[in-house]
Length: 241
Image (cartoon, rainbow, N blue to C red):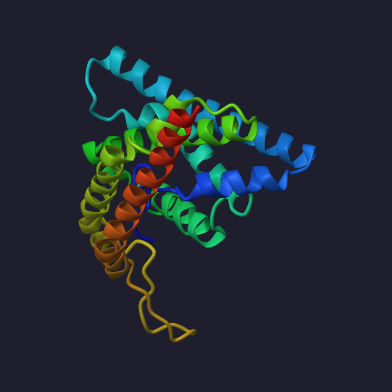
């Protein structure tokens, strides 16, 4: 469940997979579906970005901006479930990271109303928004075989800031939710019951936070490795021309 938003981490081995997919030549129908899906998702996250900017300009404050984009955020973040198995990336990795974000969206931010005014929510929402606009644009242009260098550079560079920013927002939001979860007993199951089963959601959230410790560095350094490989390959190709 760790590294839920993780800035620019999601399925970022996608460039190599994208190249392989292009070489195999997906059918016109499959390509059309993927292009439409990625265009819709790019537009959706642009709607969220515009909503954040408009709300900030109207209020003159960045506090509690979550309410201005709550519905589109839930819709498009949950809509990412449709990409599991269709994006040029590991199915397991994509499913893991998409479910992590959906978990944070619904099981933390939606379920614990008290955290919705926390500045940490805005932190991960901004990181997710920028990341997804770039990521879905990257997939769209790659499928059309017209990938601008600027988008490729942004995809493999901005994560350096966005990834830690997103992770920080996620961890701070989960931490802020802990006392309210403990007080309300949210999603917890206590004994005795007919199933002889107990579950402590408070403890589960703590374990989720702890899981970031081993997973975040691995994904981050993997992305740094991918950046060196992809951008250096691009530079060599441009020089050879």
